[in-house]
Structure formats: C-alpha cells, structure tokens
Image 1 (cartoon, rainbow, N blue to C red):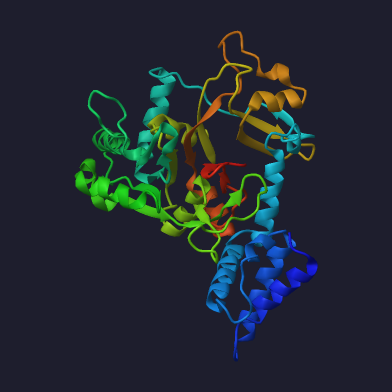
Image 2: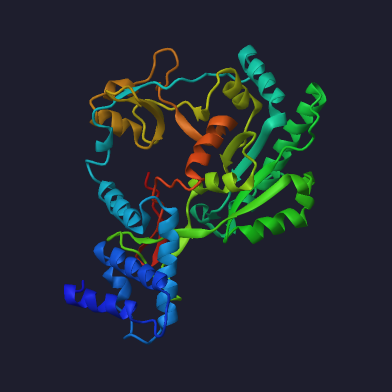
Length: 404
C-alpha cells in the first residue's frame, strides 16, 4: 500500500501529465478517476506509473476507461468495488444470508403441470396461440471449460452420441417445430419466430461460423439475431477483491463480459421487446406450455422449475415478504441453508403426497411479459446492473465467481 504522500504524488503525476493547453474538462475527468480509485484502496493500479511527461496518452486512456464504466454502473466504479468486497465477505461466511433477516419465507405462486395431462394440453394450446408475439433468447457467451472441453463452445458440443446433433441445431430444430405447429394448427401468419443469440468476444465468431457452415440448420438467416456482449465488467482478485490490470497492457483494467444479466440491456437496445421474451441458457429448451402458463395466469415473470428433494443442496424458488408488505420471489442458492438459518428448516421437508420439497429448483428458462419488462428497462435504459460478476484470479488461472 502507498502512503498518503505517495498517493498525492501519483495523483499529481496524473493531473500534470498533459502538457500544453488541455481543456479543463479532461483535467477534471482525470482527477476524479484517480481520486476515486485511491479512495477505494486501488493504489496498486498506479505503482508502475512513470513520472509526469511519460506515457501520458496511456494514462489518459486508463482514465477514460474508468470514466466509461462509471457512467454505466449505478454509483460508478467505486460502488462496484465496494459491492465486490461486500460480496467477497459473504462467500464462506456464516453471515452470507443476513440480508434475509426480518423476512418471512413462503411458497411462491405457480402452476404444476404434468406432461400429457389435460391441463398441460390446455396450457400448451394457449401458448401456441401466443407465438405470433414471441422471441426466443439464448444466452451463449461462455465456453465449455466446466465440461473439460475448454477449446470448444457449448453450442457446438453434441447433445447425444447416436446422431451427434449439436446443441445449437437442437435449439433451432425445436423452435422450427414449434413454429411449424403454430402455423399449421392455428393459422399462424407470421412464419418466422425471432431467435436472439447473445454471444461474447470468445463465442461470437465461432457461433457465426457454426451457423453459416450449416446453413443455419434450416432456419431463415433473417430471423436470427446474433448480438455480441462486450467485455465491460472489470475483473477482480479473488483474495482481495482489488481490480486487476491486463497482463498485456498495464494501463488497461482487465475486463470480461458482464454476465448473463447483460442480456436485458442488449435486448433493450435491439428493439425486440415488443414481444414475449423466452430466455434460456444453453442447457434447456422452451416449451409452449410455459408460455401458456404465463398468459393464462398473467405472470409478469415466469420461471420454469423442476421438483427437488427436501433438505438437499442447491437452489430453490422461494417468496420472501417483509413487514412493509413487499414481496420478492427469487431462485436462492443453498435454499435449505438459508431456511435453516432463518429458523424455518421444517419448511423444506418432503411433502407426503409428492415426496418432494415445496420449493422447486429453478431451471435456466424464463418468460418475460412484454409490457412490464419493457417499462422496467425503459426506466433504467437497460443499464441497471445490480450484481457484480467479476473474473477472479487464483493460483495462476482464472475462475468465475457469480455473486448475486
């Protein structure tokens, strides 16, 4: 750590590094950037800086990167670093679920559908009628590293060994089947359901190549929207939660894609939010019955879930209510641990009739109603980033910590 005098020296070297008649706006911009980072304990970012007059353009470039991120994250880079440190303290701590103190857990509203039942068919028919106003959204910015296929992307991996059909082909064939069924059975006039794929720097060119070399697997190219997620989230050190510099450029903070949540900002800028949005990760495919449940039950947000055994590890969907009457429904990781810490361990026992917990586990599939969803993103301009999803460094290799 640097002393106060050394910090002041660094700040002066930054502020005085622009010779000649530099506009005052840029000087103010540099001052704010440096002071913000020094105040948040990020002096290590400046330890390699040379005296005034050397690498001035690099110093300004660094400052502009800081300002650019601060403009898009609520509270700026200082709030990002503070939140990261707070989340780091929660990891592995007995107090990590303290934010739920004072809340009462309960079972969230939902619909249980058994495949092939009369009720399932009813919801499926209702969903098919809505496919004239649907866009499928696939979040596909990650690699297959967790599957020990680090040189590949998930979408090009085979779903099974008999045919070798890859995940992207499976999703496209599923959408085309729904599209054909809706058109044939319900006189669906709009024959093309938009398919939005959110990519990243790592996956964008490979997804594009996978589509072009396979003629989009039978889907019309003009109904596929490949939207790239930029590397905008600053990376943090796992042990200290300090910002990391790029290994290739000491005047550039290391960044990565902002996580799955950034799909909302990308959709907002795409102009495709006048329809139902069915978002799914690269592990599940959407069904008409899910959309039908959203429509018939008038759900603003609808999460697909599956049954889980009581007291088992993993996530579960639960509703929290506080004394003011406000409610929150969320898919909470380590749900049994959370309920136990709140004194409600008995709530996660298996039901006698279903042999499962009343708190199902959420799957990577969600339906968003167009009106409320668009209103929320319009209020935030699609820039609301309530979580920190940094790339953290440990033992010479990069790992992901998703803190929500």
